[in-house]
Length: 302
Image (cartoon, rainbow, N blue to C red; front, side):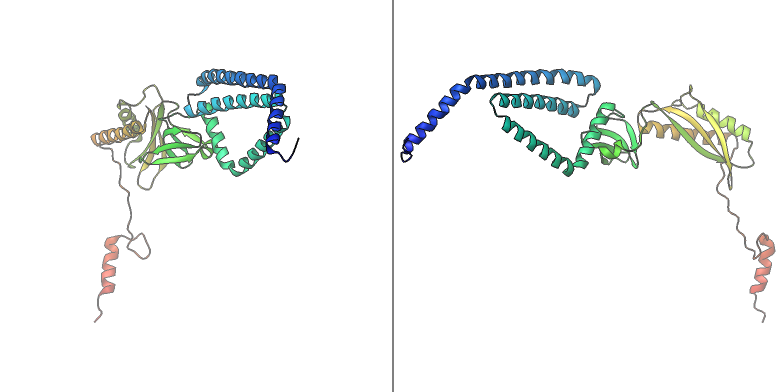
């Protein structure tokens, strides 16, 4: 072959490629068949896994992530098998090594994102709460609007939107007020020292039981807690059905009105805070005794 003749070089190269292609034709056909079979298997696996995962979780983002990951992994495996059939083992090794290095680098660079992602996946499977539940995690309290794979979206009781990283929710205590379907109200109050405590207890329990939203099959109790500065204090505890925050606030408001009404009807006093003003130097002296002394001291001797 004359290296000075470009046409001969090109033709020779093309002939070499054709001969190689003819020799490799069975392997090429086999590789194509492997890729097609892999595609069909991946498609079937995505469908079956999607149906199975719907029984575990109804989280659309998580379902899409898992099925897409499985689908892509199966396709890649069959593509690597096809490359092996074509005697491109060195290429496969290089690709795997490169993917490992890239994955390791991305893991270090985005470890917080991955932590939020994994927390979101676990919570989507375990379902500690669902959309519409009132929850509290540390200082974040609100109704769950949405759980995605990076953050939990809450609507606070004041109406603001809170975007809480999944990692913070997952690693801390979660209080779900909707789990039981009911909620206990601890209402604190106080009566004067001159009132009959047995009568106070009886009337208070009657007032609470008269409220329609109070669960009568649950315990309704009253405990006197302390001798206060100007009252004997107590706490009355009762349960109400709970689906949303107004259920709790409404029942508490009705209980306050019912207790105040029955106290007024039976001359039971909820005392105002009492303060004693001491005008004496020594303390404990009566005002009518101190006043003349103070007035005499302020008079002009002349």
